[in-house]
Image (cartoon, rainbow, N blue to C red; front, side):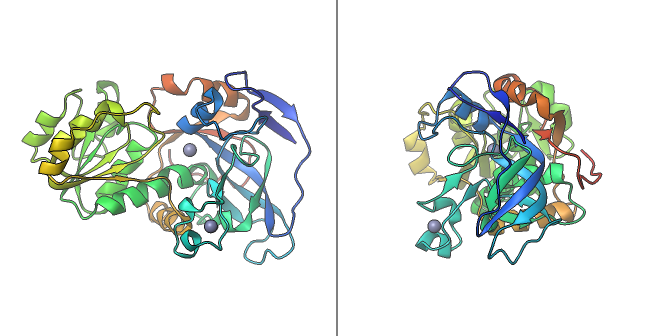
Length: 338
Ligand SMILES: [Zn+2]
Ligand SMILES: [Zn+2]
């Protein structure tokens, strides 16, 4: 099969021919239809994650069709359309048993600890695969675990909130956070660049493009919750935008550099900062139902499989709206509006 391989941090990601995996017990071979390209892939490529052992096939966001199942797999069969969680988990520890698979100490991430998604086929633990509703495209489902289920958990942590602020609202995380926040009934204040303002305005109640946005947000009545999808560069303004008792969900592959937070303001306003690593299996199932119901409209651009190295390397310069999805094989990728 064809795959992309990362051999050295910062080195070119190269196309290779390698053995297609076989279905071991409890595992499923998925023929990948689409794989999302994420800031996390960029950080992996650059070597920000010392845990990653090279060489590795990168990529952790995928959806496809079940090709083969190993012994003991009863809930999936060849032909099923599935989306991958971005990691595997033990299913036995206290975290897993309480539905917090994202904190499992044995968690292994595709494209970092396990062979990843920039390949024609992937071997996945059946527990890490979720069926995709019929009217949801595999392109949209490919990034549902990393983006949508994480945002879904984050928005739940800050809800109910009358007004929700979203920073980086034009990005892959932000544009979906705006929609998921709207789905709770909140009014949404989107912070984005002037270049993306017009498009973001189609989803948000208010759009603010100032770098120092707290003043504008206060004029709109302040925010009771925030999805902080940028991190250090915006966190202080986010804290200043919040009303007393406000909550911040910290989401995304935030810049590894430390950020300054005004502690006095946090305490005086009793603002809670709530980090979100990822979603769990149930979050992924539930958010795919929101997509199926048309409440959340995944926003993405599609690209050829050949473009994967360029897509990863150019991540910080990418200025278009939403997620980038590499099309790996044409199969049951139903029509779905972009
Ligand atoms: Zn991702
Ligand atoms: Zn576990």
